[in-house]
Image 1 (cartoon, rainbow, N blue to C red):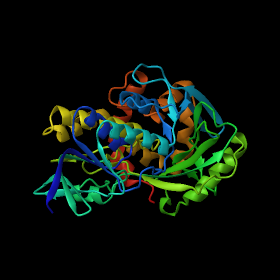
Image 2 (image 1 turned 90 degrees about the vertical axis):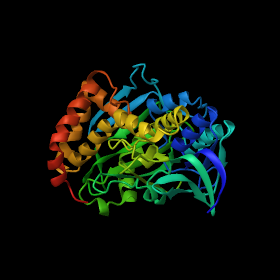
Image 3 (image 1 turned 120 degrees about the vertical axis):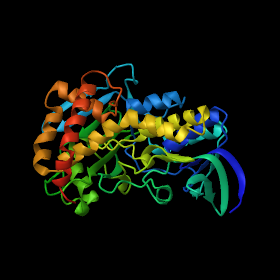
Image 4 (image 1 turned 45 degrees about the vertical axis):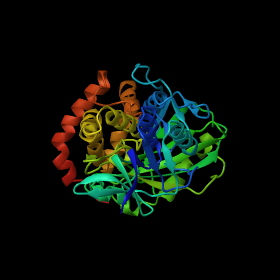
Length: 408
């Protein structure tokens, strides 16, 4: 397969992570091509919620969010306990989030990439070309595109990940989620709502949560997510789980009928590798999803920006430096989250443990930061200290947690 063209960066996937790479790199003069197997205007199934961390990254990319609905905080529900908190004003991130339909957000991002000079190839599935232990570019439609750096921004790991050895770690947890839309007179609510004590149609506790995300356009995004660490996970019926959650929120949100068929997706929470010679993975493809809320848009944007900046600085060292910095920034928190998911996979612990998450105002504020992806290795104050202690404690307990894990 002869190379017919050369780019500095070839990106596989036109979602938030891939678009962030293209925007940032192209604006700094890099020649970028993006391959997306779907057609232009595709709608990626998602919860549509954006954390303050995601808003910060979008601001960094200078993306206009005029059609996004502003969110000022999070309402957390655990059984009969309800706490409504504002996003913290720490200065590290903006004090607001948003609900922005993925079709609109993704379009804004990829349009910004094209405006910066990136080449976008829709309905074209690209795969990494591996030669002598390194990735040298992308094969698409029988043609090879040579590139100094190939970026996997393909979402849940598939064929591209298998080629470079970046598949999900089989023994680590993952998640599944499902969502739909419904009309509600509360569509302009300024708080996301998360029910932490989710139950299936039989009343059995499920490790995960249900959400109501007001979109500000007459509708709400209603969905549920569950972790693979629960007993009977393989038999879990997501449609029935969503229907059971809907009975809980139907009256307080005065919901209309579902506006579309509920759609499900997989949430990878680990990756065997995040980089190699000539390539790196960003966002979901790198397993950068918070196991405690299933959120990854903010990590996708941040990792894409970082990858582009490091390439422009030094193309040869970008992949290993990227992996090092991502590891220093996120690995401790994400590792703690995966271990925590083993813990709440046990029904007895799940029944009693999540009540504590909103039991006091102090604990609820830490839960808010965890649910908002506002905690990482640089987090100051109480949340940072709790993360450090949890990482050590769950690290010691990890062998026991894995031996006694609830089986799917």
